[in-house]
Image (cartoon, rainbow, N blue to C red; front, side, top):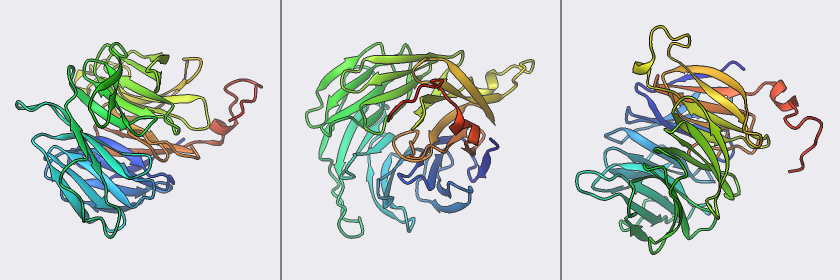
Length: 343
């Protein structure tokens, strides 16, 4: 499984995301730039320029018409995927750390960081999809400040009126999108910062990664922990493989912490775990420096999920994006032995 190496960023990657069809891959970085690539061959299709700070987060609607990004320049921006034009932007007191589209493409949720006396804030904007997309409202449809632990990740949950969030304390919680009330929480979902949060295609369950060296599978409705995958290094990202019973975990210690005597000197890997049996089944070497974000071909949240599931991509501290297309052996494997599982 030889990767396609994509070189288009000068600083470390912060997030990568496939569109719903899985034919386009979007990457954002601390170098202020968002790139879009053809997923099948790694050719760069275009660049989106306009942010004046690190771009922390990116998401694409289901029609691949609009893209939203959040940045350290304290703005949330709406872009035309096709033309690369910035259609509208919203400015806040602090940086935008996470953005996500609703399932029906009618809303965008974003979370701004707690800093300089400003509380962390969740804002939900109603997106006007008529015309060219430039006619947007400055004011959010709803806004609230999560109480307690600092929230850093957000997404629309299994029903439209709930927002799913991850926190620095390790908590995951569901909030009412209109009132901002905390509906349900799991205070001990993790013992350290939740670094990534990605939902299954039907949003009935989700996976989180954490600095506590674990990734966990949760039921969205109850926030019950279903499975735990324990590693020996802090994790930055986790994704669910479509069509196969695997989850992929990425992370690693900072490059500065790797000793020169280490047998794996600076080599950080993507790990494949059996989703049900909680056993590690394989590793793919790649980046120098930790894997900051990665994603399975195609759609959805921080590490996107593809209907085909025929490849995955990773982005690391080294500024490279690696796209891996699975070999035939991946599809021929029998993770349950001779037992056939019906979808």
